[in-house]
Image 1 (cartoon, rainbow, N blue to C red):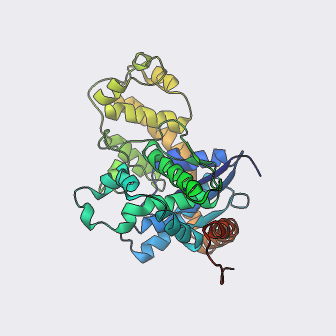
Image 2 (cartoon, one colour):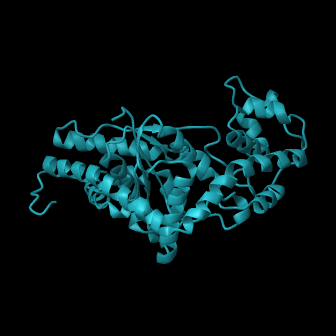
Image 3 (cartoon, rainbow, N blue to C red):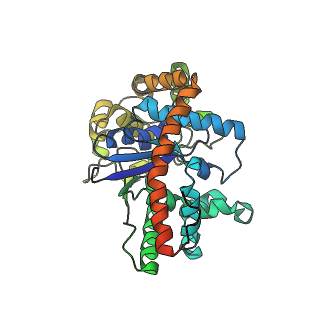
Length: 347
């Protein structure tokens, strides 16, 4: 087994968008070449808010199809839906008894998602970071690919793992590391460059979905918000080689589209700035559309083809579940032994 073991997942909620692909799935395809990986559709996390049962099934298959269409090899790296590996929920409960309420109260994402109505959200929305910790620790992952907004949850996972080890006087769980990858891992809305591109935004024109066809991509980019000035050049780069934060604050939509082009084209931001310095948005948007269609089109088409054969997707998930269970159940058994549980009926 390779030194690095990667665990990552995506919720089956709403259409997968370009940010999901660039910030996660495309990176996973690269990681699988050098690491042992487990990829999961985290349907247990999805139900922290109500889900339509039929749509949840469809979207679980859709996310799986995206993994496959992007190039993940399920024969080497299991793809599975989280709910079918029972050890996730069981270890999640155990770790919720290790974690402290104060730790969860500091989770920024809960505050953002709950808003002013936190008394009426589900307990699951509050405590899901302990389930996320279980997802990671079950497979003894060394690294977890995440965006900046999820980094705090990996830190919490490390705290929980360390407390478990201290509580029981063992060096059982190793402490996973966050793996922040790639350019433009945080794409912003096409309608508001100060807000993250999101599946939950009510406007479909705020995001580019992986399944959008060519005409819809053209229309969304044509209508994407911009500003009144020509595109900047390399002069906006700071000493670190990244765009000056003040420029991003002053021109969020322009920088977002430049970052999008840079990430999809797989080139440096400096090269993009040199290429389009002083150009008008009308010219730049046409070039951006062509890059997007070239890269997203084949993936979206392959996803649509796979969705016509749900039995194939289900078989991929079934095989992945069996492989994941074998690893997860072994970890759970060892945790039971450490804690003193009497395993009278454990398989």
